[in-house]
Image 1 (cartoon, rainbow, N blue to C red):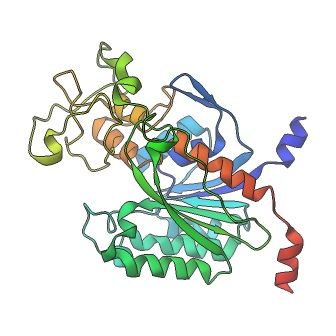
Image 2: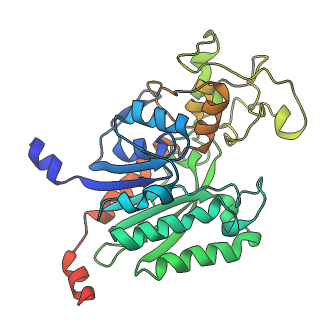
Image 3: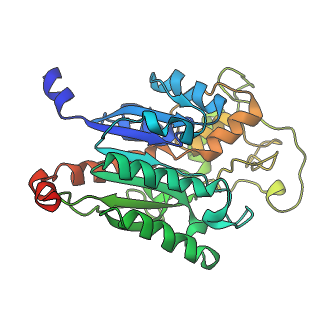
Length: 325
């Protein structure tokens, strides 16, 4: 039985891995808010990130080596092939809160590393994650270029905006997924909503048990002491709704607790991002804040993984051989 499970696993290359939110969701085998998310047939064979704190956190929790530093410094050492390539290329130049340079910006232009990796490894599928801003009018040319670059490699490419609250994440986080499938793989079908509006997990449901918990550095139940300021700096949680989007560059702008005179803690932010309580962040407050805000919610990624698995299970290599001839 163990041998069959090993043979049936899909190999995954992870780019811009961060602390491992998307990777954990793909792998499965974790608990969140009393629910078990079963193990999936994926195996991370290669991962990379630039941030040393995220890398420390990734290796501690996922028990897998991660290549540290610029992806361009490691791209020649990627595997020759893989079944699935994933990555959330940096969004700072695309985000509505950023400088709006689109893919011409130094950070978001790193999507080209994903294009190059797809060209070299020819995965059966790839999934690229980014912010909602990629769909805004000022980024139309950037989006068209990204789609064209991936399509030119022979992939059927689609994109969709997701609200993670619809997938069991207690957060009103919206993200775009760009999915490419190679000939021989069925089209990617987005997973159905599991918690549509009206059944979303609320802020109170997600963190109520932490209200009386003392600060704990090891558990990341620590919070910024920044005072209230305008706009997002004075935002307070609505206990009857999911949390607003957890940001990476908060600088003390995380929401205030719905009933306590403080901002939310990093463990509460991790709950809103759907990280299991067993996930340990290997950094102090500011860097922990950054890696949590940059992450893909694992529970959302787990549901996406089910659709990825369904598509990969249809793979017909005879179509690839015919196309190659």
